[in-house]
Image 1 (spheres, rainbow, N blue to C red):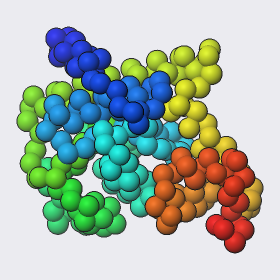
Image 2 (image 1 turned 60 degrees about the horizontal axis):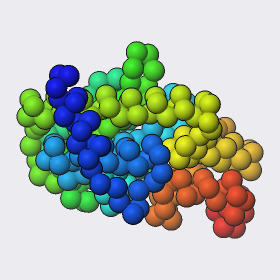
Image 3 (image 1 turned 45 degrees about the vertical axis):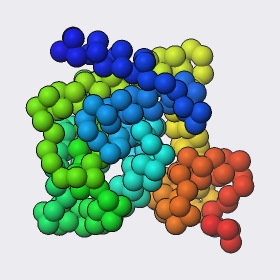
Image 4 (image 1 turned 90 degrees about the vertical axis):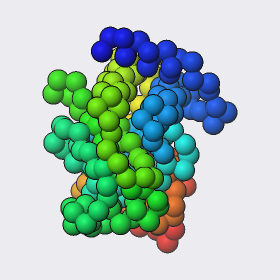
Length: 237
């Protein structure tokens, strides 16, 4: 396992940056997702940061097109990512078939419509702390091999390390992009709750619904709320 960690670490370090990479931890996680995608014969890989109180957001994806797919289960409130986070266990779906349509009646058809045929979700956790989920998408049905499963768990562990390192750095230097976006989402959720006079959970649902209806990333909507470019309860929301 140590040899696998060393090899994966080297691959991530050697992964070239892209012009659209975020700074700091966001860029590191994007490179991790890209390397994971190639190693696992995946079409796309995403990392989402989640919290016990329901706040969640996409931290990085291997390709921009997968951000909407990664956010889809948050918008619909169901899917393997949420199940993996809740159960603290990987959720492996080698084929999105009839059983998954019943299990996730909103998510499974929606993700199939976007071309996905297999999804694998790995919780990001250490001890009792849960940080999020690593999701692996494939356009062809099929299980992960034993070797790919070990690699996926290694990528999940490295995502945990990356997020923990960022939390420690943010405690002394201030938040980086991923943690800053999370704080921004907390602030937007509170503002919407006040604007609409609803509980925080309902405010978060309204933010997700607005993002889904507009076809925009949740982080962009939260940023507009914090900047007061978007006020819920007004004609524009």
